[in-house]
Length: 135
Image 1 (tube, rainbow, N blue to C red):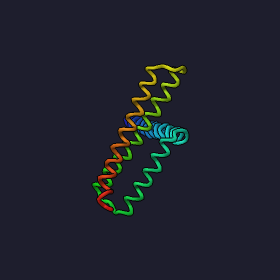
Image 2 (image 1 turned 45 degrees about the vertical axis):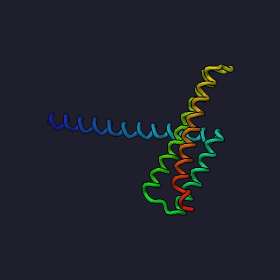
Image 3 (image 1 turned 90 degrees about the vertical axis):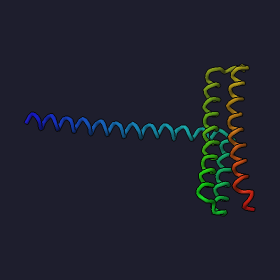
Image 4 (image 1 turned 180 degrees about the vertical axis):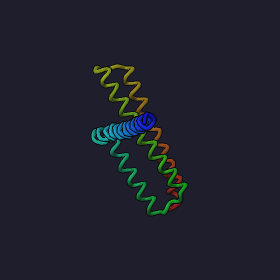
């Protein structure tokens, strides 16, 4: 009887642990999705990247891209989006930390913006390599 109660407790404990794990993962994803909305809503460049991504995906569908081409396009789009999200996070944090103009904060923001620019240029080069020969 004691062994059965101990096993029941272990099972109950494990189930609660699994339940908590699943709930915390769902909450984690929820927080991440909450981070998407303000960037898309308030960052004009992000909306431009989204339109460009949609255009590239549409062109990829029209040209029947091969699997390796889709991989390159997906990585390029993901890299630009990721850079834009990091840039937005850095800018938001910098604005909270320092309300007045500051040369060091400006430098940090410029570097973050340059990262987005570099990723967008690399994505454009990848796009040219993939799509120009198809014309």
